[in-house]
View 1: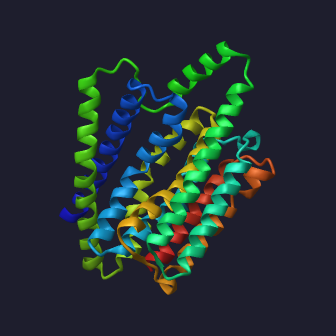
View 2: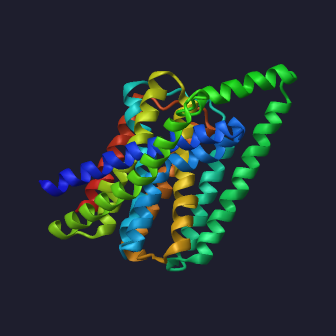
View 3: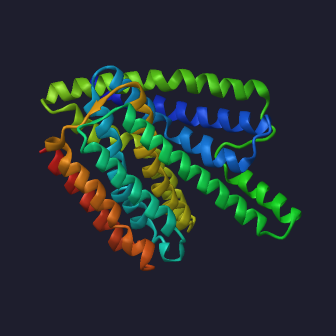
Length: 324
């Protein structure tokens, strides 16, 4: 029982520390004059992936690569099947009107690149450079596109209004936050993340030993589900507020960052061996779950309650198969 409580404690510390780091970094960037647009494309995106990143780095450093890789693959599967499924059960998400085709195609491309590199048998320095280079190109393209949309507005007044809107949409943005509070958030986030990651990785490894299952399986299920809780909370609120574009965009963006940023950065510091016989089923499920979004992205279908039940049931079935 104690080890399960330690897992819960590690998750809570990770999620709180991640939120504090995002708030501190966002407001530090805004206070020193970095544009809201750049903050939303980079700092917030990286900050919300900080728990997964720290878990992967910690696991790789402790020679537990299965936990690092399982966390990313399992999180991507959970993001689509569960993070979209549960909110759809609560309220139909009208994704038919969302313009997410380009970002979805980019996510599928990132997934295929990830799987192609996995066939090499390990994620190493070369893999990390490739993944992070692709991520940099994607961010540059997003930045240019966002700036182009801004220039197409109605002059300076529209730009100012757009900037205000961007500021309001950024999580934790408070242009009037005092410096001492900004620094406190940063310190608590930077201290809490490695502390929480250490507790979670050690506890998850102990559970794997106690139940005689691999650390990869623990990463695919328990750790992945825990680190997907922020995305689930965000998507539930977006669905209840009828903001389907936010919900779908959150999932697509999170999955892309998991594959490119987390595995990319971790590969720079440690080699991550890929056990294809053990993971080929999970890779196939991750890709299959991503392709399930095609009707909602390209055919104008809404994610209604029936689809929500189907997606959630598929995730439960997946977890059952993995654990058995």
